[in-house]
Image 1: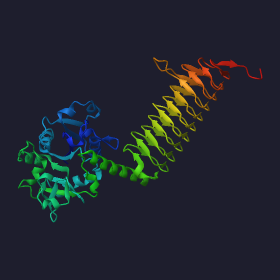
Image 2: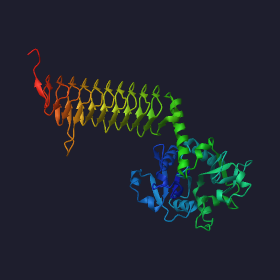
Image 3: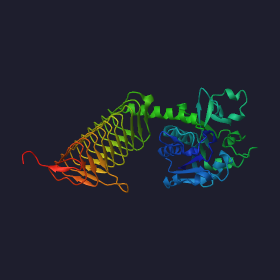
Image 4: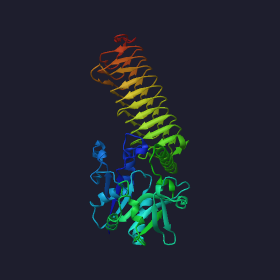
Length: 450
């Protein structure tokens, strides 16, 4: 069995994007265009992937984030797709099947790729082109083919179309399968154009490819949307968003308005979760069953346990326990852990803190760099004063503590279990167990029983 190897062409400048960010690293659905293609190739069973990049991209720090099975090859000069592929095939065993894809057609799925690979094996041919039938083929190269034989006759670039060819509605996706030895020989036969480029599609215009090239017709033409401008990027974003939302709904998630619900590709959501409009779920986020999200909510790189409700709030890099009620207008960030059955809302902000079970924090409070025990009540307007102008300091609050409205807790400080602070207190020293403190600065008061 021949090895199957991927080659991604990602050296183009992408000048029509009018962006300082290279085309391979434009974001689509929260991930790079390049990563979408890599992911599809891996799902299709390709173990080894080569990416052809420009010298400008080769100096980017983000390349160090890739696994060792992703190998980068530099195309020293921008001499076209044919030259880019020619640069790559020299690194690959001649007895291989190569899957060639551009980084700017990122929505092709693994089912389609597997169909291409299977067709190569079934028809014992040397190349296979992924094509699609579209209503508006403007801007795309056209495929001329023999339907009776299911063979490619030629591929004509958009700029070279004559009047009759311009009416053809079958377009080239720029995804190909080749036998490596075959394509290497064909690349040696094509010429450099007047503008100094070698076009990969010219190999399909050679006179001796009859019987060598078949095509695979994509089932959904939206898979082969090409991205050369921000307008096309927005179009692809909509297609991807609809696909992601549809799959979640088929899996048992209720989405009340798919047009205003933005869920990135890596997100995992269990059934019976309800998502209200204007909700954004990003990054490495997982949502357990029976969660309510939104409206007007953003969740990034967080874990939300079952039964919790999050309304009009912003949660980043944090974990929310079971049956919590968050919001409206809460912000939770920087590795917070909110344990089960907590109430956090009405403008509360929590940063880098652990909140014990059954705590209540609401009404414009700020809790930062803190650890709270269970069943703590934080009154309206409470602030943990965690920054002394030089460094952050910690606050520790024990079980069953009641913090009165408007209390200032001057960190570092420890408020022991079963203690209380009066409204408006400024507490700048540790409070003992079962103690009540009030005032500015706060001082202990004796209980009425004593």
